[in-house]
Image (tube, each protein chain N blue to C red):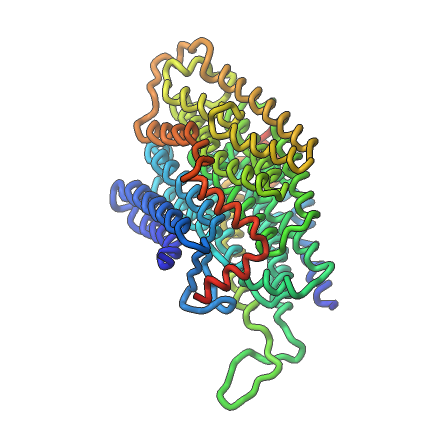
Length: 112
Length: 500
């Protein structure tokens, strides 16, 4: 249970970073933390106490396997996160070229 | 016929791959490939629609790799999916034709068409998939392509809008992902039909409302319902006009409204609590956004606020939960995709010719741009709900459905929203197309033929859209309504189709 709560805490740290930080790079780091926490949560869902790796052998009867599906899904999700982060960072670099600052309160050409 | 279902994903994905590979070296390859592939997808989707309406159980299930669900990923084509699929391929075909000329002003057309094709691939994937995690992956493909497309001009405003959109979109995806994780933890399966089956036998008083809230936040943000709408008014006007047409016309509907319907009606099962929330959010969107739209002077920004408002109508209609309400909601979904993309294409045409889209600068364009002016008039009357254009019928059905189910207040809000929409489009007509032509615009010519062609075709659909309510075409809408109303029986229908 404490593991899940720590996961929630990590999620909140990331969410705080996105909502409250004024620096674009810190916001991106917050986004990264949020994505890690949810990946961690999904992997935890598949974990069994004292479980072993889910490899079926010919003459063995594996009783306590961890669930392999979340691991496969999280791998996909990590790659999606990588794509988003790369795109967002490259946009942030371009924004720095145009505005000369990473401060979100000074990047305000759009109004209305 | 079942075997052509995966091609709705394969064709756009392959086109994106080929264009990024060859587009730089072969002249005109990108344009030819994109128009060919979107035409093929359109033809396939229409032929699928015709075939599906002739079958008895109105559902086709494709098993990827021959793995039987719930173990493998299945692609499901039912009445609602085919309805969305035809809409997406129709709009994306006309927008692709329009972009052939419009994108001349930007550098690097091949990259644009690669991203465009990826976005279509993501949307088609969301619509046909029968697996919840697969839906998330396609959602991310479409979203990432759209973040990049919003920033395509790489000017200061576009980058700012794209950054905002990317951050908010990623937060929405996080909520959706956590919702999927909770559902997987609770039901131990990811196949939509199987989740619905497990949920019908396994009850929990706290997991489902929590998951429902997560999905409502995530998909609501993607659909830009009112408390989550802040990104749309920045992102949609900043993109190139053809992409604004795609984003407002179909992306928010596929990623937001379709996914909401699928999750709430087919998987979790619609309870009165969810429906009330949807109705309230819909009404709030349609009133707040139209009031914000009234004070806009940037043409595309005005249109973007109207997108939020019209999505409000769709969600209100679907949230009513009655057959008539859902019919109105889905019909308005289709109509809005047509006239809103037409309006954005018109704004792109004005921008293309004049280099500005500020309504204070323009006037009297009807004299120099007759096609744009006439198609814009048609689209404006459609969105404002003037008979006999298509928007009139769908709004009328939604208002009737409100009255029929006893929600008089919501019906009144819908009428007020419609009147305010009319007011703001009269402003567009007055400032952009009527009045005296400024001298500096005297020598401007109408836009090239490809742009005119797609605007005229969309205007044609606007005029004759009401025909969808008549008999031979009515089947198409009725199947979609049936698929929504079927609710959690979705699972038994899918498993029956698998068994065959």
